[in-house]
Length: 326
Image 1 (cartoon, rainbow, N blue to C red):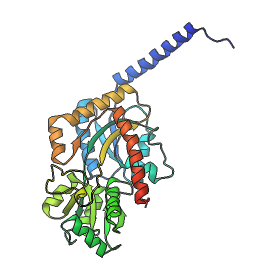
Image 2: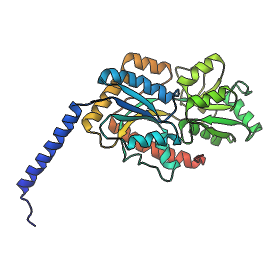
Image 3: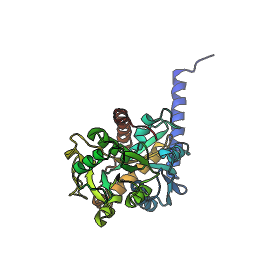
Image 4: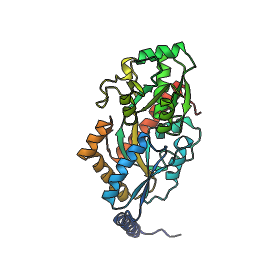
């Protein structure tokens, strides 16, 4: 077999790069060609759903195509996440997910997708602290009192979460581990159904994002005891950080946008540019801040590095706290 001369190889390489570049530019130039689907692996009504609809509404305007929020709860977010991993890599199906995405590789011995290989990061959208809320019947107005009450009723109190490995679940498991208390975990398919049962008194406590919890706190239907962030949230200045009672406690839930691996770089750049522009627009930024959320909008490369770090970080937390899939 005769090898091609170096000059011929250079010509072939140049032609290949030109063809790939032309295909990529064509894909970007005709994108989007139809409606987009933003998959949310949680039930409607929770914080992820609220954020998705906020972004989708503005994306519809800027892209000129309808962006539909597709709620796919169940399987501890695996159902919706796998759906996106297997979707065509043309930028018409994207995922809005949470830090649970970085937790599941440790919780499960085998996932139906590879968290790093099967997805392409687009941007880390926002960070949003969780708040610990209890039913008014719980005789505790501070975290310290709640811990004392839980110790006096060890194994008798239950708490709701949006599923094993989600940020609300991790938030409470860290409290349990650091405070030495025993609570019964009751996982739900989303924040809204979990909160419904908390308000109804079926469970005693729950961690949930500030936006969904604030109206219930203001109405007196729920009582706030602490936030997971290292400092007080501007949207709830009277609620202390949990770290004030349990030194060293801090957990920063995030929400990010990804797509299936293989999306052309030009389309990823377009999505990144549009989403970050939305997050940084003054009215959206003010709206998010009023809910206790902090817009981020970092680059795809920065989000990719963040994901790798988060997977390692939560692997340590899951193992040290003995968190298991339920």
